[in-house]
Length: 580
Image 1 (cartoon, rainbow, N blue to C red):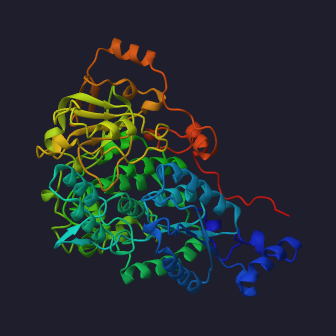
Image 2 (cartoon, rainbow, N blue to C red):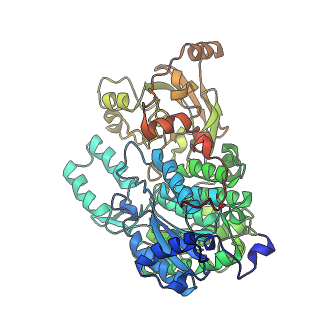
Image 3 (cartoon, rainbow, N blue to C red):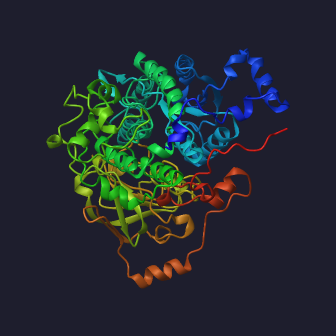
């Protein structure tokens, strides 16, 4: 931040619209005043956008209208003018073919709305999986002062005297029905108990992981990530954030000041410690590209490899987000990382304080939920990045959610050409498969699905489940839900749809998985692999038109964050020419 930009008062970008007596300024003010805004609100005070992903089609975010009102209270108190606006809301639970396909569309809308409107700062109202990275990507590309408010997790699911986690219980119960351990009527009864309050996933799924990532990056106020959606302290957090964004504008504290290399390193290590979602990998890679920070898959492996997973939450552990909040939340985890020498304490946060200053007061109130390092769920909790002739550009695995006995394994491949092939054959009793096999699914990556859907945690065949087997190795170019679990190798790059080696795996081939040595190997002679690749022809058709064709033509690989090639970097916040 330059000293000149930090001087207050100073001329703000919103005054390009509102200050003056010429036709254009009167035009802008007069239309705004039809909402009942007094004239003195255009006196040069900070104009703060409230970028809201509220939508009834995005259940995780359906309560954000109320939180936005709390943000407005804080903005008015601090002397700013709040102006709320909607953006496209990619909801995970209903949007097809996958919300991931529309993360970039949402980010584009955010970027252009921030740049094209009379805004000096913005509060990013997020919750559901893709809304958090999308809004941060858009804000990073514009670089006006920005701060995140998440909607918070829902309350614990309660069913038959047990806590059940959103998503995680769904996958568990679905497998139990197939194995005969649970009846369909029981499953339907459990459905009523899974999502019993407003909010996002109550497990350490992608929504909660990305809330933690926003806080670990320094882009949300300390303590934001874990407060339950219905807790009054969530409203307080929104109110305080509204106050803070006004001061951020006065201080000219922008995303480029916060989203540094140190911030991303902090977030990667935090993701390991919380047992966070593999989806955080593609999202942080995309965000780093927007922020101009050189971040790679190798960084994920190197930075997280020696970090123990100390948060005992589903799907890796036992508890849910309510207990995480009551135990002290993410500040406790960050403080533990700091004390172990794994956190950049001097990284700046949106509060204007350093990370070490923010987490200093944190205390752990429940060591069953946030574990001491010596009792960690796993001593190496980071994202494992595997490479080899099957994944030249990498594939990812979440060790904290995997089975130890499968971390080194050689098995016969059972190949599904795409998701439809898998669905058509997986329940066939004649399928030649047992628990020693490795399930392989192709054409589910960014171009292949399209959009890289969360189908990588393929359910096991019923005949295997009936043996009491709960896990098998599964490999694909897809993603999986952050609420899912198992020895699932994901994001294999290059993807099958563009001719990556995954495309030429055949049933009967043997595959070697060696997580300790980060190796993923298709055990055929190199000459045969080369010949198969030379003979390969694409099977995925390019969409003929519309956004799907734009996506297909411009999406980058999972190893680059699956952003669009033309959206890399920041384009700034310069005020464009007049519209009239």
